[in-house]
Amino acid sequence: MAEPLLAINGITKRFGGVLASDGITLSVPQGELHAIIGPNGAGKTTLIGQLTGEIDPNSGTIVFAGRDITALPTYQRSIMGLARSFQITSLFQDFTALDNVALAVQAHAGHSFHFWREARGEEELRAPARAALDRVGLSHRADTVVSSMSHGEHRQLEIAMALATRPRMLLLDEPMAGMGPEESAAMVQTLLELKKQYTILLIEHDMEVVFALADRISVLVYGRVIATGLPDAIRANADVRQAYLGEQEAVVADG
Image (cartoon, rainbow, N blue to C red; front, top):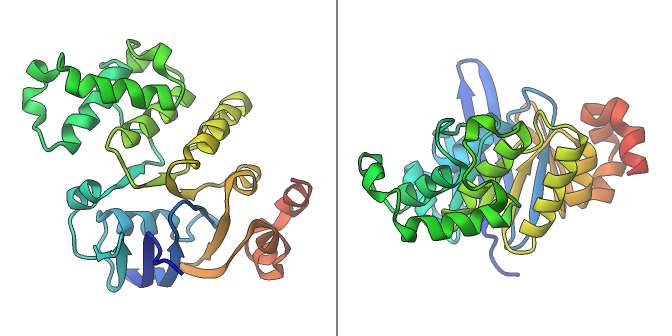
């Protein structure tokens, strides 16, 4: 079997007396969309922070593309091909959608924002930015100021910014958060297209979305992975139903 693109080995993280990551071990092979689910406070976002280098684990290792990245800073992980979208969007509201994505291209290339005024018209920045917007269905909004775009469009734009860094793997933290039904449906279609090309680690609360998209699912409870498997196996797992799915069980079973 080929080595996984991402291998998390015994990651542990404490915040005072709180054990946010309790020996987490899981792997994500090339081309998989792997979802992580769990109740609030399960440690999902803490795990993502450790994968991107924003949070240092107390122990354990993270291996990406065959290289131990546990001690690497965030920017080096980005250069290697790890790209993250955030649970709460962080966009330049007074810039256009195209400007925001071009900034992501510029930052990934290692250039300072100090030169943004001069670089703003450079085609080497804007061409990949346009391509990324097209991938998420926002090419028609390229010249729209971000502050006038909808919440769903903001989430799509954030993924476009991640794509603009030419990632090998996308780390998506709650991409459906705050969306209505139509926006969620559009995002699902976007992710279905993206999973054809990218390896994706997805954190998401919407169980219908998770079971529609995921190749495999890991369930995180109190910082521990209590189950990892195919969607049907997770759906049928009694421990998972008791720990997390609860009232959603009937909805998931019908999905």
